[in-house]
Image 1 (tube, helix red, strand yellow):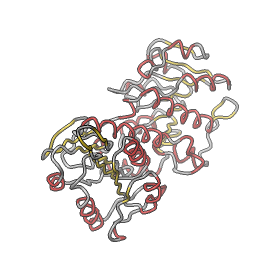
Image 2 (cartoon, helix red, strand yellow):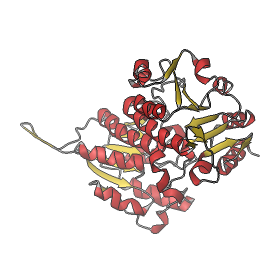
Image 3 (spheres, rainbow, N blue to C red):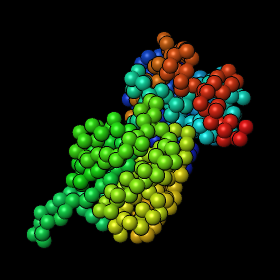
Image 4 (cartoon, rainbow, N blue to C red):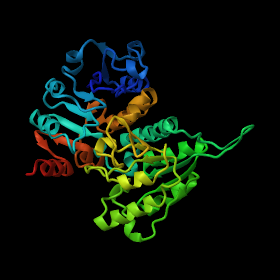
Length: 381
């Protein structure tokens, strides 16, 4: 079995799907690993590091994709790249299948079996493969550092010859993996942290990290969904949610927003009117900017200022920490590869909850029910 790692071509992407330590394990298990020259360089892994551990280094994209049984990537491939996939091959990566209709249709028409790692079921058996959690951990950590850098406040309390500097006040909206990591990082830097989430069951986790949990005044705001995700709120619930958040913004220096609903636009948690209530010089770090943003005025990939508040519309934060992000991604990928192979060969059991739940296309069809539904709704059919 040939597992190939092409160089990522998406703008700003510095991660690589497999790292040398993972390649060593795969080669040791009898897998042929092919690396496109320079694929790991931006993440800090030169070609020699792969070659020394048994990988085959090839020159150019054509050689990387040609005859590969399995292609592993971080970002979705371009149409030019998918054209290089051989029939009945396997593609694994973050494919954005719920919104990328052209790619999913193309993969199905080519007879490619594809696995979108963002569709991985949130079950205990799949935790070691959970790429989204790994990358959210990186994003939550980096969001706080960027927020601290953009703020005019020092995060910790300091006692100096010039007097006492009071700590920064941070509010984290959404206590999923990214939010919890943001809470932990902000606390390590010395900030006073509050957090809000529509799922009341995360209260204990938030408080265990040293933050105060904002408790909803009414149970109507609570919205726990399947698989540990928050579900979309009703209009009345959302109105109550905004009121609650608005009452807690007045003294905040940095807000980290992390709220996402799979396959849906990001919910707006900070309105224009709420921005006007915030302190001049306050900072909002919007991790949902790519999905429309949690904050009014947020622009994907840009820093803007609205009513004296800086809004950072950050994209692909894991790519800003490529060495460790790649290591985490590669270990998740290796575990998934081990799950769908046996004795060095592909062993696809679509009746398995993990394999079947992650499979997007197979034998010329879109086999993932939720993806098919989302794409049909998106096309209006």
